[in-house]
Length: 369
Image 1 (cartoon, helix red, strand yellow):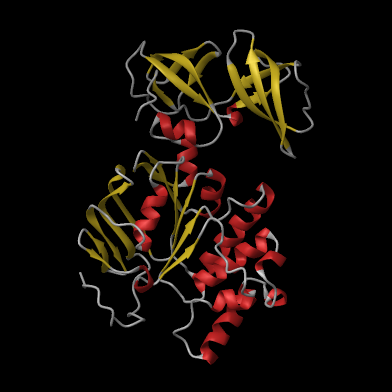
Image 2 (tube, one colour):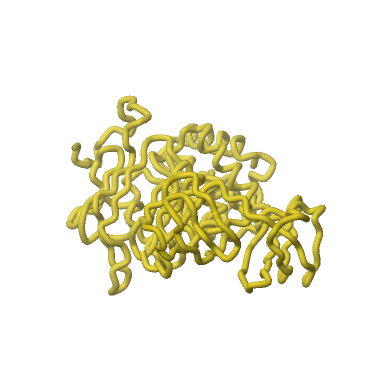
């Protein structure tokens, strides 16, 4: 491991894309007087975009601040580009880490124009190189026509682009983003999430984002770490987090869904009040074990001849689909996504069937991970 030196060259030799850029090794951190992060480890490779996802207070922002150098660590170490930047008694200052940061509120300078905001972190460059770098970022972000405007004259999406341009202009080794889309409306944040993801992939930028919103995480993250109480409880692809959650917490936190009680009949069958469900793999439970089955909205299919009768208790229009909250005659709550042409009102009776490709089951009342 190379030790950090403020005189280290700005550009290192080319490295394999598979090599780690960020290594977090068993760090613990306090927030005020309470432990916020416990023996946390994470490796991010060059060019990856990853997300830490979890509810408020789970420790994700503390981890991000520790990477940036704004928060001390009590145990472990953090390495960026194979250089130790954080240890218990050795903290490299934030400005020496070559890390870019995009904050939740964008933190733009209100008295500076777009051009001046982007140039704010380029004081070490000559005037000519600074102008070239700013011009490049203005073009990349589509901000050329807004270069002389002030932040208050921009839309939320344009402000987001300025904040991103300012963070990327110094060509950081690592980009950190703290809830970057939270101030945008839902339609715009989905658009911006995909746009930012495409741009980061195109430029090969390594990025770590923290968010409480799974849609933001799934739009940007190649890998997502779901956090609870200061630790990652599952590190996986968005697809696997949704379809193969490893804990009750992850299953409940990711996506929409409900849990219904069931009992194992054998290794591939579960008996529930809604009928017998088949598993595509052998279940790791003994016969007659009491379990809970996760049902996602896409597991509940509208079928005029279906065996399950339910009443609509709530509906949410989503364009091509409508999300229905249903209650069966036995009082079981279900969520279902129907095509928009299957249009039902509150109180209407509908027939459905279950079409579960992969059973996700947990021990009953296993809400504590």
